[in-house]
Image (cartoon, rainbow, N blue to C red; front, side):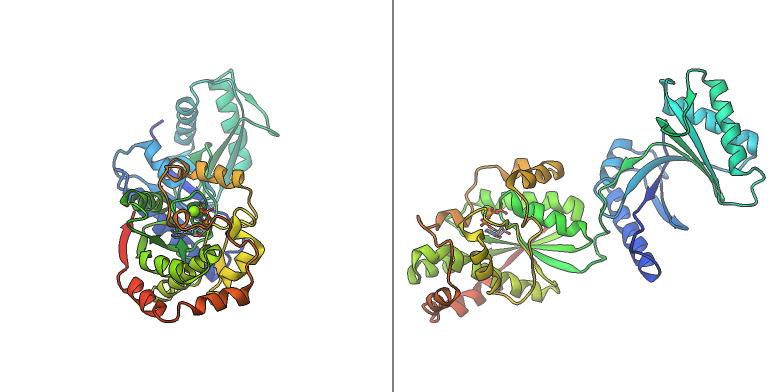
Length: 393
Ligand code: ATP
Ligand code: MG
């Protein structure tokens, strides 16, 4: 079957009234963006709780489906045949053709579920169910009817045109990006932070990202890896501006002035502070990290509290309760895993102490940071003014 259109279903829970329009319009925008990359010249439109994407030119079906599977807010993608109302006999013929083309192997059970949204149509839905069922049984004797648990649920919707569909491809769920504000993702080259960004974007949040780069301790290749990861996340989240902060001078200064076992935690506090400044500049409502309780020394409850203390914005940590394997599973599903495991050092691994504090005392940490008074504000300003922003799409 050469499909020309898709019917796109979204989960409607919690999006009644005015919110529904915002939700639908944002979803349409994201669908347009996603389908723009295909050849189809798609027209995306809505009609009473339904979204349709109709091709105006030949297109690569698999490519279009793959693109739609990445659009948050889509609950299901139904490739559909849409026909003009040219009388009931004509509809029967089209339904027969549909079944024949979509299911070359006819050994399946089915049920017809007709719906007459256009009440002017002369045949009722019950009658259509019976007629179309009989017609299929007659035309394809290997098929059988099963009204309780059919292999194929054939839907025929009579609206101002008639939609015929039976295949349902699951979408990613979530909410359309752009319906829930914006947040700043601290994106490292690891496994966890791309997953964290994906998860927050899935709830409709637009993403910006910041990467702390420490040349020459971290290589250009490490930076490129982060750009590559941002591009993968952007396939779902839409274009991501990635802010690359040169963190070397700050790291060296902390290294010179503070106890080495506190390096990681103090460094992380400065990452949060700089990320927050950048977040404020670009209208973000929070920060996102890939932290998970207990994964490493800097992710104990005490360390997380010490990190939180450095900034005023809410910090979202969507993988906080995930085991590593659970995070890996998502990374594999969304396609970031292979890139994340490439062996390029990140700036944290170079400056780690042999025995980092695992239960930092906030009072002590703040006191150590006083050693930085002389130059740190200037270094932070410099880091912020020299940010390099790369658009990842
Ligand atoms: P990840 O797999 O995301 O790198 P991780 O388990 O290696 O996480 P850490 O290195 O302790 O954990 O980092 C915790 C979080 O801090 C990361 O998930 C990320 O959000 C942020 N982060 C760490 N290093 C950087 C960096 N160089 N640039 C930006 N964010 C960073
Ligand atoms: Mg890391």
